Length: 174
Image (cartoon, rainbow, N blue to C red):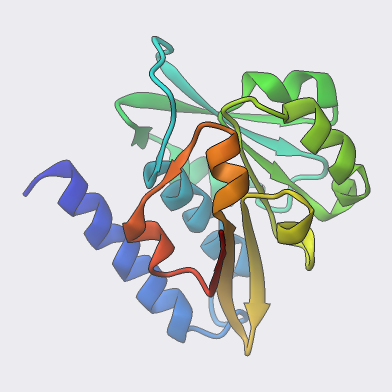
């Protein structure tokens, strides 16, 4: 079985479980950490020679060890995943994926300006952020974790969100 099929199978299993799971049955942040990984796997970035994939948490980290244990020994496009936790907005342009935590959502506009035209996937889990310039936003609806996608934002950043990912989105802004 090819890696692409294996990742798709893993993604489908996680999404099918999480879409039927109540948010309180399995730790919400464990599921969201799995979503972050799958967002990374099903996004294509411009070519790079980098050996690491930098996943950054901006603000207070809601994932804790869940994210570290999930990402351990995982790879994104043959790149080792390195997790950075930061409150420094000036370091975010070194990241391929930035998750903006609730504690820093008030800085969303500044983050978007800082990362404007850079190949960085901006992800949040706060209502209304998809319309403000976030590429992917996770929410809990009817006790299920869902996500919305903003294709215009992703494309402007030079990113391609896979159709395999987008078919699981609750809504897709074009």
